Image (cartoon, rainbow, N blue to C red; front, top):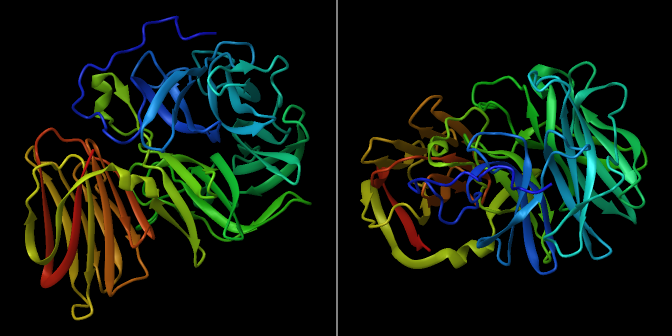
Length: 471
């Protein structure tokens, strides 16, 4: 089927359109899908509804890039409506085999379209020789049903190859309404054998009722299960979003299909981060994209004919049993000019910047003499929107404030004598990377006026500052 049934929705106002983050040409987008490097290009697919700025029957949008930053929009790769995916082509992944690109995705089906909680799901294949035009496999679905002890929640396959065998994990929910990850294996990507449960939630309160968007990979000699659980209860400073994204670190046993692992850790502490996926770049880096939004968020850009964006691409690094996230090195190519490079004596200092919508801000401060002090980056717009990041050197607590409902988010660093903050500001987003990616906050930030940026502290401290205007 082709995207020609309805007129694609136009963008009517560009006030919130992002300059260097990826978003769909128009319409709705959510999860990144099918991240892969193929025939000289990085490919990003994504959950897409081109006919409205609200969620609808999911297509797979598609773009490619040579540098992870400048994207060429390509024809929609997958359109729902065939017998295997009647009501949606839900999330999935990609892999290269025999110089062809294989997409593996979830087909979504409603028993009754008036009851969207009553559905079933299967797993399907589409194949391309050029990375642009895809043909659905004639014998879809390749996995028709979940195991008998599963509910209807059975989606988001992530595929990889290990020692000549293909493996695939699927997010799911068992019959006791607990989130879990299932494993399948295949010799040819087309015929799959169920191999059991990789790991399962112990209880809903602490672990969640459904686990989405799983991703299993090795990083610095350890096995990482990255996924998005739904239903974890909020704690004092943790699990504050509607749904979370985080990881287990452990050891995966290919013989018994099980992962022995530690506790669940959130990957990003911001308001707007979900449904991640990773892939390996040609140089060996493990790179991640996430959806830079959250279910049930207000998303005011919907009024303008579009909704949703992806985070900056991030390199994952495992250090001391913790995953760090760094903006990929390619982001340095966005620097158009350096607008500030100096050491500032800070108590309450306004940064004099002509452009505040597209910036990279690098700050570094030492607190050897001022343990027990605080340091804050404070953003305030002329239409009264506020955001701040505050570091308490005594507790090592980082507090993110964003004006609006549910304003606070928290993180903690191991450092108390120094801090490095790298901030990327785009038209309607702000991303904070603290201490080389030890703590990250991803935020959508909507405003239409001008932004003032202040550095504040309760003691006179010296802050080394480098700020770049981004193209």
